[in-house]
Length: 212
Image 1 (cartoon, helix red, strand yellow):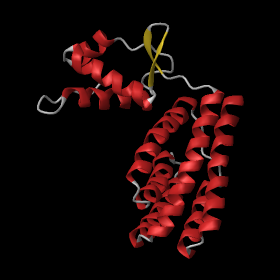
Image 2: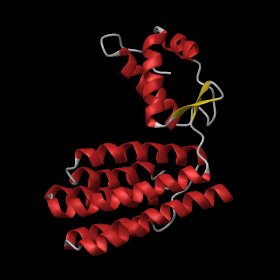
Image 3: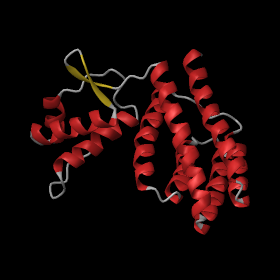
């Protein structure tokens, strides 16, 4: 684990560290989280750890199971429901982003696609590039409530992918490019249809990984 930096808020540091260990897969699905052990490992009292655990329960990354706090273990129903929410919210995000007409957004998307292509050629993981592409669109919506809602959903989906080791499908970059072109043209109907299909493809890819 990382070390605690005293001048900063202890419970926020504990939250960030614990969250990172969950998302990166250092802590496995259904693994029990023991407050005293975490506090000892971080070198702090149990109070900040308790608050960090409470925050992670709100995020959905931890939950109570049989009287114990455990790492979230998604099932097929959870995955489908999360992607349903993501699809609706990302469609709204791309629609609002086109309305806002943020000129910097298109430049950032174009740069992201070049980075994605480079990562594909070098056979690197595409997780960060994929997340960044969608984050650029989301931030360009200028809707703070939407940004917060999607941030929680994206965190859980990222966690799912890391624990399931789901690979990205071959047409990911092509789909991003088509979305970019629709936004460049200001074609909201086309962009919405493409986003619907894109998120559905992502769901099918995750479900295929489970069934494999």
